[in-house]
Image 1 (cartoon, rainbow, N blue to C red):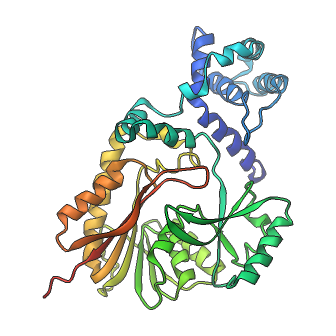
Image 2 (cartoon, one colour):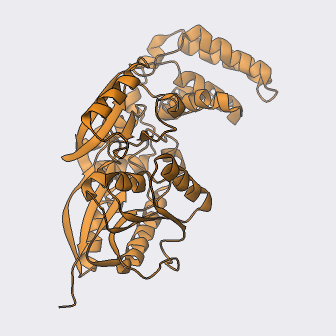
Image 3 (spheres, helix red, strand yellow):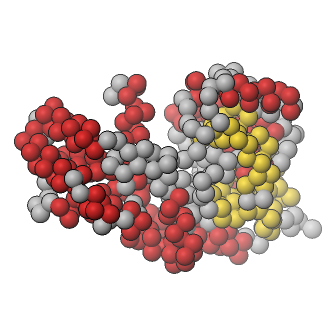
Length: 398
């Protein structure tokens, strides 16, 4: 696919995925015999584009029908079905009551097990978590404190963004944790078009993801390990806040390159290590003051950024991920010095990967004490969903 087309294709795909179950319900109600996958997918995407929102305007009905039929003509796998596609779509767009019979809220784009798990955990609160995934995510910048050091330079930089013709608002806190310099744009832009990207003025990072660096505070002079570090957002944030001796650990060598690129662009010094958090053969034997364990998870808190996640996950994945997270905690804890702190992080809203995991670790680990941290943060219009638990290692040598 040509790179110039990628943003548009991704936008259409994500929009279709966010309304996937709703569109499928309409198709099932109006087509007696299921068409081939290619035809089904074309009708699915077209129906998903019929309804607009404040953030996602609808396309004209006649344009959608016409383009869908043209797509059939251009693809040998679809050309036989152009009459079917035309008839089905004209019937649906010709009667708005057909769409009204299928309220979007009745067809969230999640499998049944996902909805049941959230409802069991949070009751009526599950509705807000589900609804948050139906909106495109905000674009939030984390300004580089090493470069933009004072109020004057920050104000000047904000004015440079405003010259692009979009709005900018500052997010001062998330879940009671104060953020230093988080700017949210009223609409997303290619990072290359935002002033100062190549010069390292900012990184794109969700406001809730910025809680990690803010929670840990200034790590100057401390040995810090960011395990499972790619693409390096949290590691870079820690280094922007202070001169830490930071190791960024990543098992994937290609993703490790991303960390190195971000460190270079932001003018930061850190050591990137390609290695497995479960098998610390890479460790030099010196204990860490701080460990960030941003472990692999279901990513259920960032579905609006990746609306394909509910389509790809299976219920059995949650238990497998829970076991992996526990193994990583067990492997990393010996690398932490007495008095040191470990921050456990997931971008999940499932308790099995959050609060239940933190309780398990505290019950299992006799030399661990749990410190104050936000715990479960649910996704909102301003940020994604994350879980944070902070532990301190007791000195048991006395």
